[in-house]
Figure 1: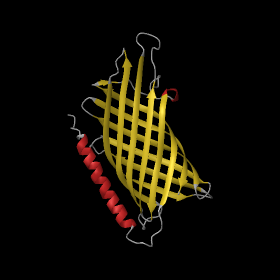
Figure 2: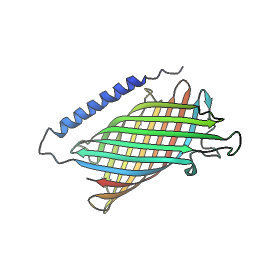
Figure 3: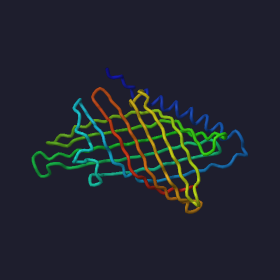
Figure 4: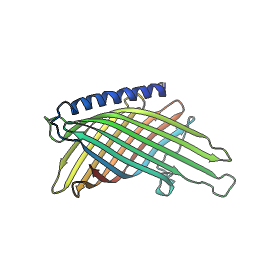
Length: 252
């Protein structure tokens, strides 16, 4: 039996309440002591060269596995991408914001009466609060929300059926970060979410290395894995993404 999904208006209220709670705790602790250190902000535009495997289905019709001989999610079919991470930290508290947009489009049976243009657009937006306990070195606790917005369309015979699904997952996790030799640093992150509230499961893992060039700029390189299984009455999204990331960190 399929579980009922939350209405979008309820999701919006849930996001607003969660955000207010996080910011209330965050701001209360930030300004409790006027002698605290100043904020540390970082903006990191990045590129995630992810490969995609799994299955999607709409209207009860399951697609072939995505990791078949024909790969719709190839760089040749990449129609647009934009991604960046923003973080703010002050003493033990902070928050993270991550935005990823990607679009794939291809033309099949070109210049024939059955020419078809499938397209997939996806947006992943993540917001999390961060707490660093003083009793444990190099460890941070994170908790937040990850919204995914997936739109699938197919242009065929002057028709363009389209389906969009949006859902929000809570998640909790850990970040372990420490300096290495010289200007090198490493950070490991793992979090798990979904819990059957929206997605059945959502797992995210990252390993990132940073080379600090100076007080402002750093080069980041690492690997990320994201697995999500979401199922609605007529929509299945059971996808894993993994691949290398490279970015430019800007401190201010």
